[in-house]
Image (cartoon, rainbow, N blue to C red; front, side):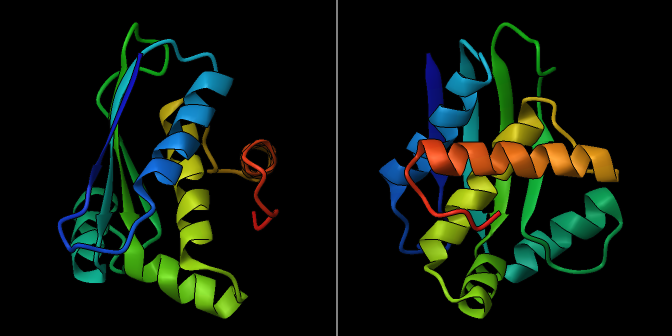
Length: 144
């Protein structure tokens, strides 16, 4: 069973079901039988603080992933923190809907929880290919 919850402390206009469906598609596609995952949508100061605290990067970012279990655990647990303001800025710049950018970030964060990384060129290519695969599965345009 995939238990996916959404934290929206800043009351952003979110497509809750579509965001959960994107996460569920990744977990199903990656063979995750059970999970408890929270998707948290936060503002720039919030994600900036987390990025600095956990990664020592002094700037807002798009996605931070906090695994609470190993990718192969019986129940995958974790949190995907998404910078709503970053998504909105990037979507505006790339001329598509903010929700589409958010869906890409959900897919990206869930792939991280499943064990994918993007810390070197080969891993990043694999991550982008997986993002495209899930965008396509969900009937969404390729913005990866």
